[in-house]
Structure formats: C-alpha cells, structure tokens
Length: 284
Image (cartoon, rainbow, N blue to C red; front, side, top):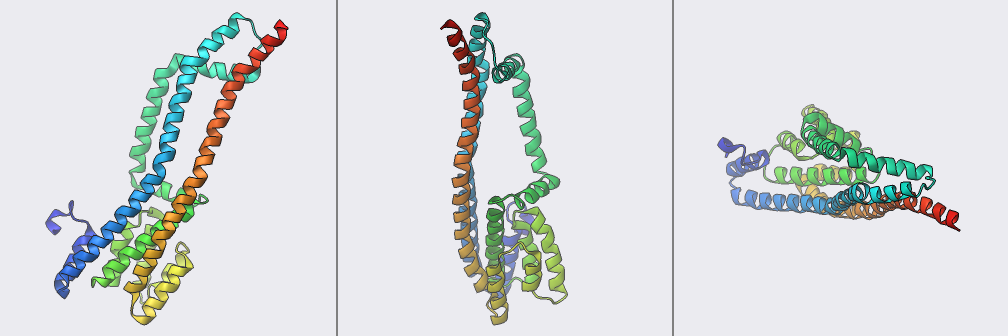
C-alpha cells in the first residue's frame, strides 16, 4: 500500500500497519469503512447545502446580464426618442446597460479569467490559509467550520487510537484531514506539547477552537483510559451539530439572496418606470 501513496491515504496505511501488528486487521478495516462513510456523508451534506445558493446566484447573474444587454437598450432608445427627462437612477442603469452592450465580450472574458485565477489561487497553500482564516471570523459560518473540524478530529483520532496507532502519530495524521489550514497549523503546537508530556486535553483547550464539551469528554476519556470511546461518542454528537449548522446557514442564505436580487430588480424596474411616469405626466 505504501508503494501506491497516491491511491491510499496516509490514515489508511497507518491503521492497516497497526492492525497487522496487533492482529486486528479485520476490525481495522471495519473502522476504516465506518470512517470513510461518515466523511462521505459529511462532505455530501456540505455540498448539498451550498448547491442551492450557487445555482440561484448563477441564474440570477445570467438573468441580470440578459436584461442589461437585451431588454434595457430597447427602453433606452424609446425614452431618448421621446425626449424624456431621465432621473439619476435611470441614467446610471442605462449607462451600465450601454457599457454591457459595448463591452459584453470583455466582461465575460474578465469574469472567466477572474474565476480561473480565483480557483487556482484557492488551491495554493496561501489561498487555503486565507479562506480558512476568513471562515473562522464570519458569523454563523465560523460555528459551522468549528463543528466540522471538531467532528473530523474526534472521528479520525478516535478511529486511529482504537486501531492501535500511538497518540503522537495519530495527531500528526489527524492534523492533515481537518480541512482548515489555520487550525491545522496550530495543531503542530499541540503535538509538541504532547511530546513534552502535557497530555492532549490541556493543549487542545488552549487553542480555543474546540467546544468545551469535546474537551470535557476527552478529559474523562484520558482519565478513564477510554479516550477512543469518548472521541467516537463526541464525533457522533458533532456530526449532528454539523447538520444543524448547515440547516441554519442555508436558512439564513435563502432570504438574504432573495433580498439582494429583489433590490437589484427594483432598481432596474424603477429606472424604467420613473421616466415613463414623467412622460405620462407631461402628456396629461
């Protein structure tokens, strides 16, 4: 398996190695299957939650672009032929529409280039670190990220320890699967303190990224010698917390997106109706 590192993750190889040494290879594979099943469900929940806002935003941008390029120029030429007095909001919207009509190819090219640059940058270490730092500071999103990291840490660490992997080695593997670069960097300090004999609970508590319940469960697990059991129970709890956080985030995003779109459409409609109303008044 180590000869095919691109196929088998590091966590799999270490757990298989521990299972071979301890004679519990069958149990190790059962734990691995459960681990990857939980990870898959977690990732699927996150992707499903983000799918609706992304689709709505993309469709909205396309509709607004069509309005700017195909619909508003017709109204603009009609208003100009009637010598209607155009309010400020109408001049701004019509000017934007003319810009879209003239430079639509540059706008589309610029958007595509920006998206490609953004995607490539976010794949770099600095890009991942930037997004991780921003995610930990945003309201609601930070709670979701912390719950995801907590669930992954508890699940992965509990699976590794129950399979016979040593604590320091287990922490080094867990550090790589948390999904947040900022917290992963801070875990290096936790590993150093474990090597100095300070245990696991106190260094993790000092990070202030993990909820008090996880710290309490880990403390009880360390004192009773059942750390793997405590971690697995905590992972089950925070998996449910992730689901709750995702639902809360999507519940907040949907009306926010609707309000933004309603504001944009209102501005476009007013830019057309105000001069039409002025023309109607003049005719009367």
